[in-house]
Amino acid sequence: MSINLKAPLLSLLLLLSMMVIWEMATPKVKSAENMTEYELLMGGASEEARVPPPSAIVKKAIEELSNPLYDNGPNDKGIGIQIAYSLYRVLTGYSLAALIALPLGFLIGMSPLAYKTLDPFIQVLKPISPLAWMPLALFIIQDSEASAIFVIFICSIWPMLINTAFGVAGVRKDWVNVAKTHELGTLRTALQVILPAAAPTILTGMRISIGIAWLVIVAAEMLVGGTGIGYYVWNEWNNLDLTSVIFSILVIGFVGMLLDTFFAHVQSAIQYQE
Image 1 (spheres, rainbow, N blue to C red):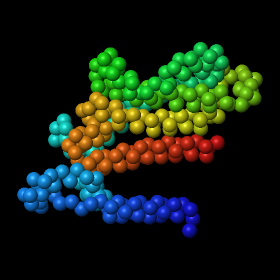
Image 2 (image 1 turned 180 degrees about the vertical axis):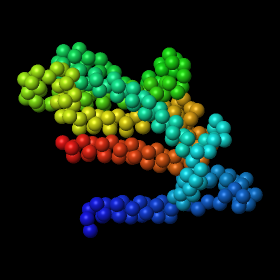
Image 3 (image 1 turned 90 degrees about the vertical axis):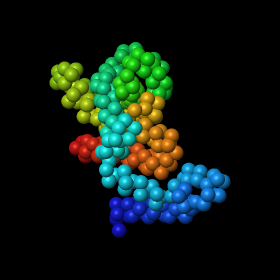
Image 4 (image 1 turned 30 degrees about the horizontal axis):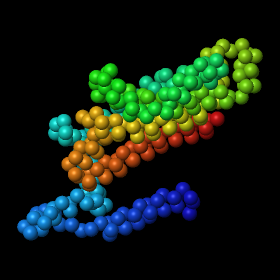
């Protein structure tokens, strides 16, 4: 049996084992309607707040995924709608970051003067937590949607910028010299010589950025509220619905895996062409 077949089977076996152990370790509790009056008076109903078993989470997943696009008002939307709002914010902020990070990264990588000029600003701004910008963004922009997009922009720009600059600066000098020999202009050299050589490193930065953006949007939506998967998690926690909380956490992980897988396939395609 090949490793490509063994790995998924072992992953499935590990998942099933973990679910069985979790199910067996979870105390069985009575629902409120099945409790006696004495048990309710003694606080028995509060036991419903315990961590739910996998069977309850699977049941919740089937319920939510059977109608993911329902909309019953501001605080009651399907999981599909919540994910769509989050993805819109992530992709908008991420795209804006790419429009600035990639050209600026090329400039820094190709020009030692630009590197020495801009590096102090990058080193000061890069370590700042993206969420630290949220209060300032809310005050200046005065719109929660735009503020969330701005935070995604801030957190996405640095990995793309740094990896692009590193990849461009690492292109072999003799290739650039050959381009100069053929009297290629700066733009043509960047597009025809440097970009193909630096593409794997640039895509690595873009892959890191999309992962960070998906992480940050959950926290940002918890702060600004309204819609999105982060707001969904926080709202279900306020309702003490731990089954929905765990379900939404798994959804966040699954969507993040899909985003990362997409960029992994793009990287593989680029490297294969080379």
